Image 1 (spheres, rainbow, N blue to C red):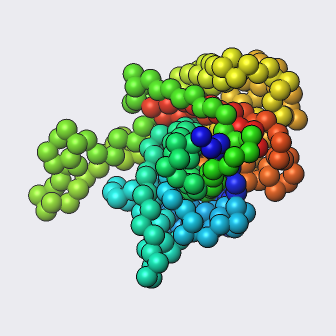
Image 2: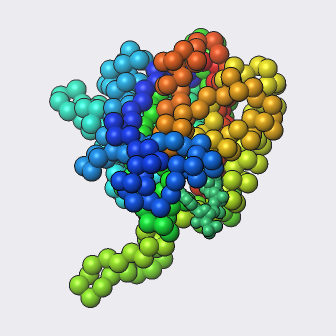
Length: 343
Ligand code: ACO
């Protein structure tokens, strides 16, 4: 059975930087830099322009990951696309990405399977579990795994939505998960979910139980009430569960792999809130030099946070061959996950 390792990383963030100050002055969010930084650590985020879709961000990050892996897109056997902000309701963003990478063009078109993963902030780790299992089983040699989000189009910028809208940003991270006979790669993954909290952090947008699924007026024009249109979140409850589940699933990984804190060289935590991550690091005694963060620059990019961290940490030299890496995430669902990787 081959091992599954990360043969290349890539990232893309839109060029437009939106500072906390600009969120207020240019986008009209009733907030202050101090409020956001104090509670979340976020100083800025990126917003993509109108006309740019999630799969466009993903395509840029994917090209970088493929180049880093030394692979052509046609050498891929599968695409796994984790997002909560897919280009359209359906089909998923994976097929748009497949087209944008040129896989459908010409006589040597390669119609690889394209799978969308819908596990929000845990989407990348659910995707990593899927991709590495496909590789280890021998079904695939190279799987492109992307986490990408365009949140900026779906933020309620009014006072009602400011708790949520001050957190999120746009971006994409991609990795190629490849087969190897070397003794390295994804050592294990641990995933969980608790559907009792499905509505606590959600964007209901439509209700398929109703007919029609979106209320319409007499002209057939859909009418979506604000409480359905925008994401809602019970922030304090999410905070509490995030801490409990992230610590729990990290400890499970450590126990099953027979690891102590000292064995791990780098921790890549989902970037939802710097305070959550600092609190967890303090609770379990992770030294600050082993915990990398970029939420200050990008905000919460949901499924993209961990691959963005990987790509940046690799390029800055913080993440190097031979290191033992622990990843952990928590998000809407609730869902959570961890993974241990020998880089
Ligand atoms: N600027 C200024 N004031 C604000 C803002 C804002 N952006 N947002 C909310 N407020 C106000 C509220 O209106 C409220 O005012 P009031 O007391 O006059 O009614 C006050 O600040 C407190 O609001 P809360 O919503 O209770 O704020 P809280 O202290 O809980 O902080 C936060 C909110 C930062 C989101 C926190 O609950 C949190 O970190 N939760 C964790 C959830 C998380 O990180 N989610 C990220 C996405 S999910 C994921 O990735 C897992």
